Amino acid sequence: MNSNTATNAILLVGVGFLGVIASNLTGAPIFGLAGMVAFVLAAATGIGALVGAVREGFDAPHEPPPVKRVKRKSAADPYANVPY
Image (cartoon, rainbow, N blue to C red; front, side, top):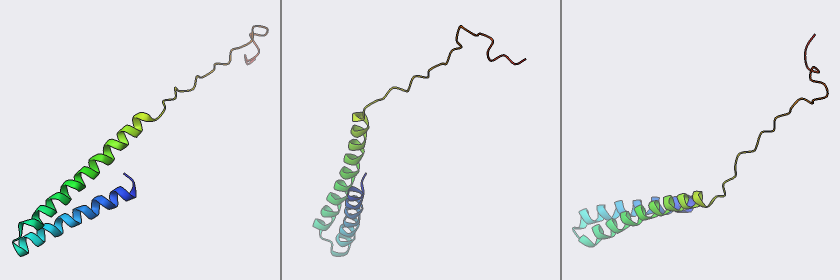
């Protein structure tokens, strides 16, 4: 989730709380509805960011691990590394 998406989600949750508070203070159901819509949009923003991150992870190219090469002794001197 980038900072713009996180900021939008935080602001939507804040608006949702303000809508619920305004609905309780005034008794007007439209403020409660606006608060509920803000909470739903915040949840949709978070879910959309999560789905986008998963899709981006699946789109990343897969690179196989590097092959380790084994250095073999030469056949000319098989006892070159033997301590005396």
